[in-house]
Length: 384
Length: 126
Image 1 (spheres, rainbow over the protein chains, first blue to last red):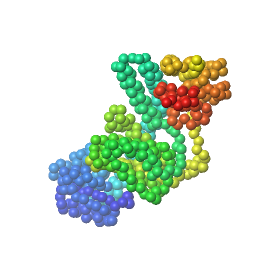
Image 2: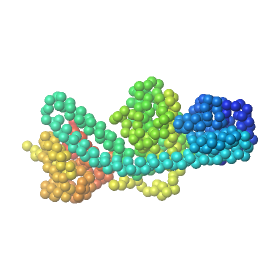
Image 3: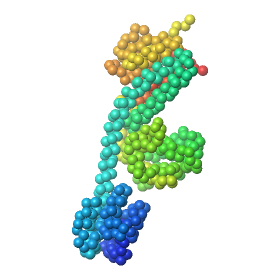
């Protein structure tokens, strides 16, 4: 069972039953329970589950307004995966079957409730939930990697094939411009050249994404790297009313990574924050670094509009974008994700609508064993 | 009257060669082209141009091979690589192998003209 003390919600419209079940819970689990909350109605349960997370919800099947199954369906439809254990009355066997079918983890007969049965059921629910989450995470990583590999191969090949025709179009346009054409024709040619440049930029972004360039690893001073990269666009940021606020940990160790790729991560996050905060006032981007036991933590926060909860899980997916056509390829965060993961690090996002978004990056300080040897070799650019 | 600067275009895209040739001729250069790496080396042997523009990814003898062999044939010829390969990461290695300048496709022809001027007259455009 989880070492962390459990948070449990009991949904029961009968106050006495709640007291009875929660006493039993404390007897059964002792200090393993931290919080036992009470929702006294269907609506209260929906409300409280929307704002808090629980390890387990014990739900009385018979609620005044609606039954427990309707509650279970509603919270599942909102993407809430809290394990639910039904508490049924005597002779509710059919109900119990129905409950299990609709995704409950277990059901317990209220009349026969014992410490042991309760403890066992909760232990089972928590363990199952943890396993399911692990599996889900592994599956999504697998899916993303698979998607990335096939997209990578495709992009690299396609990019070269697209750049050649673009080159011919661009050359012909530049040749035609020498012919002393009427002003309106010249204007059109310039517009065409502008579109060639646009297509080139997108193609190059695709290729950057696909690029399997070997990491050129070295010890990187993150603060120095950030400051240097920020100088490149800080002027533009100021024009957009964006202030960068640095909260640097002076004891931050250097990390072993590819400096260019880290700069790419940093600039991509800055650009996203800037796009998100467009046309707003009093914008702040806070970059906070912290030395942890085995890793460095970089928090990258903005006070922009935030990311809607229904899309927050998709933002690292390739080609997912909310930007206007021509403004984003949907590859930036996906690229960042793979850069960080390749260094054995993690990147997570926390976002609140109306408050802002924080990206939390953790990169290990130790050099992976299989790279210790490589580190002693001089840098080399390979032709491939 | 000084003789015209001779330029050889080497690129497997015929339409690119034709249009770039026309463009450079309008700027007063004497231009020939080939879409084939082996033929490029023959042409250089016959009569080395002042400058060669060179594609990298070509069927048959590719741009790298042309680059390596060409410098043994003519020491004075300048070479500008114009390629759609991922140039930013290649600049150093191409320059080590004898390229004087490396440009991306799609080619910015104003930039190309400037590079040609610099390399053939040794002067920066004002």
